View (cartoon, one colour):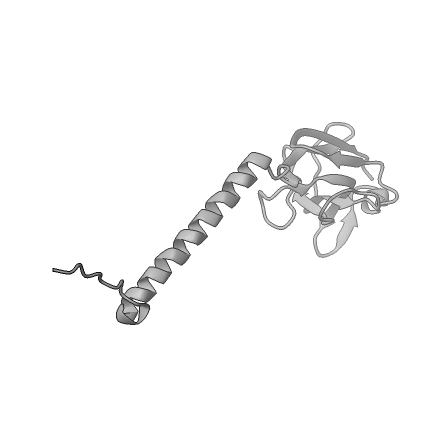
Length: 164
Protein backbone atom coordinates (compact mmCIF):
# COMPACT_ATOMS: atom_id res chain seq x y z
CA UNK A 1 0.00 0.00 0.00
CA UNK A 2 1.49 3.27 -1.05
CA UNK A 3 2.23 5.86 1.61
CA UNK A 4 -0.06 8.82 1.55
CA UNK A 5 0.90 12.21 2.74
CA UNK A 6 -1.70 14.51 4.10
CA UNK A 7 -1.50 18.10 3.12
CA UNK A 8 -1.52 20.42 6.11
CA UNK A 9 -4.72 22.42 6.34
CA UNK A 10 -4.70 25.68 4.45
CA UNK A 11 -5.69 28.93 6.09
CA UNK A 12 -8.92 28.82 4.12
CA UNK A 13 -9.84 25.44 5.65
CA UNK A 14 -9.48 26.71 9.28
CA UNK A 15 -12.67 28.37 10.55
CA UNK A 16 -12.53 32.16 10.69
CA UNK A 17 -13.23 32.27 14.45
CA UNK A 18 -10.24 30.02 15.17
CA UNK A 19 -7.98 32.11 12.92
CA UNK A 20 -9.02 35.32 14.70
CA UNK A 21 -8.52 33.71 18.13
CA UNK A 22 -5.04 32.51 17.15
CA UNK A 23 -4.10 35.92 15.77
CA UNK A 24 -5.36 37.58 18.94
CA UNK A 25 -3.28 35.23 21.12
CA UNK A 26 -0.15 35.95 19.04
CA UNK A 27 -0.70 39.72 19.21
CA UNK A 28 -1.36 39.72 22.98
CA UNK A 29 1.71 37.55 23.58
CA UNK A 30 3.92 39.93 21.56
CA UNK A 31 2.49 42.97 23.37
CA UNK A 32 3.03 41.29 26.75
CA UNK A 33 6.63 40.41 25.92
CA UNK A 34 7.29 43.98 24.70
CA UNK A 35 5.80 45.49 27.88
CA UNK A 36 7.79 43.08 30.06
CA UNK A 37 11.06 43.92 28.30
CA UNK A 38 10.36 47.66 28.55
CA UNK A 39 9.63 47.35 32.28
CA UNK A 40 12.81 45.35 32.82
CA UNK A 41 14.97 47.86 30.92
CA UNK A 42 13.51 50.84 32.81
CA UNK A 43 14.02 49.01 36.10
CA UNK A 44 17.66 48.27 35.29
CA UNK A 45 18.53 51.65 33.79
CA UNK A 46 16.42 53.77 36.15
CA UNK A 47 14.42 56.88 35.46
CA UNK A 48 16.53 59.41 37.35
CA UNK A 49 14.24 59.59 40.39
CA UNK A 50 11.28 61.79 41.05
CA UNK A 51 11.27 65.33 39.63
CA UNK A 52 9.56 66.54 42.83
CA UNK A 53 10.42 66.72 46.51
CA UNK A 54 8.26 66.91 49.62
CA UNK A 55 8.82 70.29 51.31
CA UNK A 56 7.59 71.37 54.73
CA UNK A 57 8.68 73.49 57.67
CA UNK A 58 7.60 76.41 59.81
CA UNK A 59 7.06 80.14 59.31
CA UNK A 60 6.84 82.43 62.36
CA UNK A 61 7.41 86.06 63.24
CA UNK A 62 10.97 87.02 64.22
CA UNK A 63 9.98 87.13 67.89
CA UNK A 64 8.91 83.46 67.65
CA UNK A 65 5.18 84.18 67.82
CA UNK A 66 2.82 82.42 65.40
CA UNK A 67 1.75 84.17 62.23
CA UNK A 68 -1.79 85.36 62.70
CA UNK A 69 -4.24 86.62 60.17
CA UNK A 70 -7.13 85.30 58.15
CA UNK A 71 -4.86 84.59 55.15
CA UNK A 72 -1.45 82.93 55.72
CA UNK A 73 0.19 81.47 52.63
CA UNK A 74 3.71 80.63 51.57
CA UNK A 75 4.58 80.42 47.87
CA UNK A 76 7.68 79.07 46.13
CA UNK A 77 7.98 80.95 42.80
CA UNK A 78 10.63 79.63 40.34
CA UNK A 79 13.61 81.95 39.84
CA UNK A 80 14.59 83.03 36.32
CA UNK A 81 17.62 80.71 36.43
CA UNK A 82 15.82 77.75 38.01
CA UNK A 83 16.82 74.37 36.54
CA UNK A 84 13.36 72.98 37.38
CA UNK A 85 12.24 70.71 34.56
CA UNK A 86 8.70 72.03 35.04
CA UNK A 87 8.53 75.66 36.16
CA UNK A 88 5.45 75.85 38.37
CA UNK A 89 4.94 77.69 41.63
CA UNK A 90 4.10 75.72 44.76
CA UNK A 91 2.16 76.92 47.77
CA UNK A 92 0.83 75.98 51.15
CA UNK A 93 -1.17 77.35 54.04
CA UNK A 94 0.66 78.33 57.22
CA UNK A 95 -0.97 76.85 60.33
CA UNK A 96 -2.25 79.62 62.63
CA UNK A 97 -1.04 77.94 65.85
CA UNK A 98 2.20 76.14 64.99
CA UNK A 99 3.37 77.94 61.86
CA UNK A 100 3.72 74.58 60.09
CA UNK A 101 3.32 74.36 56.31
CA UNK A 102 3.53 71.73 53.60
CA UNK A 103 3.89 72.81 49.98
CA UNK A 104 2.13 71.39 46.93
CA UNK A 105 2.07 72.25 43.24
CA UNK A 106 -1.35 71.18 41.95
CA UNK A 107 -2.85 69.00 44.67
CA UNK A 108 -1.95 68.21 48.25
CA UNK A 109 0.84 65.67 48.48
CA UNK A 110 2.33 66.15 44.99
CA UNK A 111 5.34 68.13 46.26
CA UNK A 112 7.52 70.78 44.64
CA UNK A 113 9.50 70.45 41.39
CA UNK A 114 13.22 70.42 42.06
CA UNK A 115 14.80 73.80 41.28
CA UNK A 116 15.47 77.31 42.62
CA UNK A 117 12.71 79.42 44.13
CA UNK A 118 11.93 82.84 45.58
CA UNK A 119 9.99 82.37 48.82
CA UNK A 120 6.97 84.67 49.10
CA UNK A 121 4.48 85.22 51.90
CA UNK A 122 0.94 86.61 51.91
CA UNK A 123 -0.34 87.42 55.40
CA UNK A 124 -3.58 89.42 55.57
CA UNK A 125 -5.85 90.48 58.45
CA UNK A 126 -8.99 89.85 56.41
CA UNK A 127 -9.51 87.93 53.15
CA UNK A 128 -11.96 90.54 51.82
CA UNK A 129 -10.57 93.80 53.14
CA UNK A 130 -6.87 92.92 53.02
CA UNK A 131 -4.59 94.60 55.50
CA UNK A 132 -1.03 93.30 55.25
CA UNK A 133 0.52 92.01 58.48
CA UNK A 134 4.03 91.70 56.97
CA UNK A 135 6.15 94.08 54.85
CA UNK A 136 5.43 94.18 51.10
CA UNK A 137 8.92 92.85 50.32
CA UNK A 138 7.62 89.36 51.13
CA UNK A 139 5.18 89.64 48.20
CA UNK A 140 7.72 90.48 45.47
CA UNK A 141 10.11 87.90 43.98
CA UNK A 142 12.90 90.44 43.46
CA UNK A 143 12.57 91.89 46.98
CA UNK A 144 12.03 88.89 49.23
CA UNK A 145 15.04 88.08 51.42
CA UNK A 146 14.26 84.36 51.16
CA UNK A 147 15.25 81.92 48.44
CA UNK A 148 15.71 78.16 48.45
CA UNK A 149 16.99 75.46 46.14
CA UNK A 150 14.94 72.28 46.22
CA UNK A 151 17.10 69.22 45.54
CA UNK A 152 15.56 66.66 47.89
CA UNK A 153 12.83 66.22 50.49
CA UNK A 154 13.06 68.76 53.32
CA UNK A 155 11.09 69.01 56.55
CA UNK A 156 13.29 71.47 58.43
CA UNK A 157 12.76 74.81 56.69
CA UNK A 158 12.31 77.78 59.03
CA UNK A 159 11.35 81.27 57.93
CA UNK A 160 11.24 84.19 60.40
CA UNK A 161 9.23 87.16 59.16
CA UNK A 162 9.11 90.79 60.25
CA UNK A 163 5.83 92.16 61.58
CA UNK A 164 4.29 95.38 60.37
